[in-house]
Amino acid sequence: MTTQQKTWFWLIGLVAVVAALYYLRPILLPFVAAMGVAYFLDPVCDWLEEKGLSRTMATGAVTAVFFVVVTLVLVAVSPLIYKQVAELIARVPSYVAAMQVKLGPLLDLAADRLGQEEVKDLGKSATQYAGTALKWVASAVGEVLGGLGAVANIISLIVITPIISFYLLRDWDRIVEKVDTWLPRAQADTLRGLAKEVDDILAGFARGQATVCLILGVLYGVGLTIVGLDFGFIVGLFTGLVSFIPYFGMLIGFVLGFGIALAQFDSFTPLLLVAAVFAVGQVVEGNFLTPKLVGGRVKLHEVWIIFALMAGGTLFGFVGILIAVPVAAVVGVLARFMIAQYLESPLYEHGAPLGGAIAQMPASNEPSGSDPETDDADATEGDPPAKP
Image 1 (tube, rainbow, N blue to C red):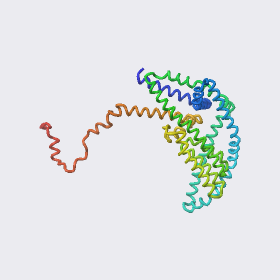
Image 2 (image 1 turned 45 degrees about the vertical axis):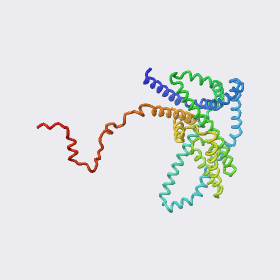
Image 3 (image 1 turned 30 degrees about the vertical axis):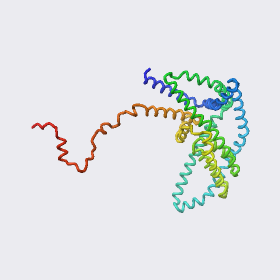
């Protein structure tokens, strides 16, 4: 098989896999969730195996404990979350009215400085953008709830995910060994190195960032509740959960929390306290949590992560958001490998210069002291005499 045939083989295989995932996306959620659970818990099973347990016993114990803990946490937290979300939705009109009253003087001042027409145009633009944002959020939430709202999907997520997690976790090492036997023998070591790099990135980002988000959610929730913000726990928890989106996640939570505080409080002190909670959270995350739990192993730029999350959500919905970072990690590793191969190749060191003919042309700007007659003589020297 020639190099061109190999290239076409892998390209066709990649397109087929992406197309299959796209058309099967409605049923992928329990499988993606199960793969994530198995990936997270595999080191625990390996540790129990080293202590003398069989793989099956270790897998059963770890899976049971994990899902029991998750179920207990959901049972304890879900009623509070549901109650606060319902109350927040019910109070949105009153919050909007309160903000209009409090922002009225600022609007009047802006009208005096800019003019009534300009303020009206700004108000219309803000209303349109706010409406678009609310529609986007509503559609995203509706998509998630719609995908999980059907009885079949709920059953698949609750019942099928633990089963798939158990089998994946039990056979994880066997699956890795089997895939290793499929690698092209000539490139096996290179592919193993790339896979190891991907695993390091995912371990650093997924496991570490999940812990960071959980700690931030508790920190923001407790802090905003102590400050006295309405729905502080749900706002803080939401901010922590979306903090895996660099900067953007915290910004969403801050805007939401500060907006509620602006409508709720009549003095500046509570507003400053709400801002202080988010500032403390950022300091703790940037100086303690992320360096300790995530570290410098993650080689994914923030812009690349944001693009991957948006692209994954656009193409595959909620499932796309879940797989966006792993896919971005794989693409990043492959891109760095290809760039390294290019920099070590003759194409980089000895490639033909672009515009080689132009580079060989004499400079167009002649020195200011040149003699035209001498130049003409030099140019015609050695030429054959012209025929009459």
